[in-house]
Amino acid sequence: MNPKEIIARRVAKEFKDGDVVNLGIGLPTLVANYIPEDIELILHSENGFVGIGPAPKEGEEDKDLVNAGGMPVTMVPGGTYFDSAMSFTIIRGGHLDATVLGALQVDEQGNLANWMIPGKLVPGMGGAMDLVGGAKKVIVSMVHTAKGTPKILKECTLPLTAAGKVSKIITEMGVMEVTDKGLLLTEYNPEYTVEQIQDATEATLIISDELVKMQ
Image (cartoon, rainbow, N blue to C red; front, side, top):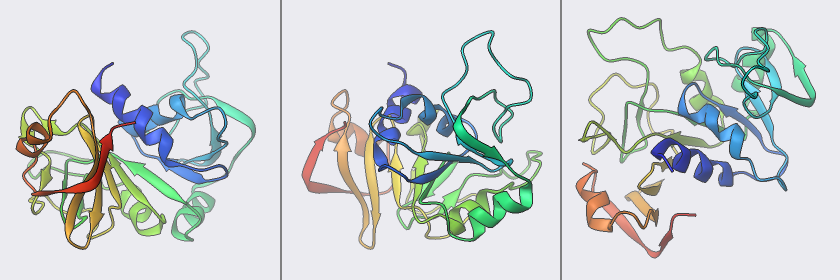
């Protein structure tokens, strides 16, 4: 199983029946493929609809049905379209139970940097600032390092998307909760030792007394 699949499968277990959840661009969109059958979520796409389903089978894509990242998606029965004003009313109005976002960096204070690297041309922050400000829970889903360089830091060095908004970090190595004392490692992938996870993390991890294998 590749790292992105490990992450998406674990993120999909975070939600309860009836939750309204936004899946950000990139890795988070994979989460829609792994929602447990006994859980019914309302998946929101910031480009203007709710009711995202799993990715379409090859050859069955609808060019007019894409998520905010421009990737083909499906829509579940009861899904509906609306304009950007309504989409961001949902986001800014506090109607999202959770948002799942990727990150360039995240730190032990729950700060998030996910929109630019100085010197590189980017189109802008998009809806990320609104999503992390409006959602009740912010889950960062990302691979643990960037070519061996830690992405989970003591303090972000890139321009912030938001300060102190991240609730949980899920990588292929484990699950970390942001607490007022720092990052609490609650689950670990048994393919790695706790020491290996710490070595790949700049921030000092607090090891939970109830640490379990990653689900």
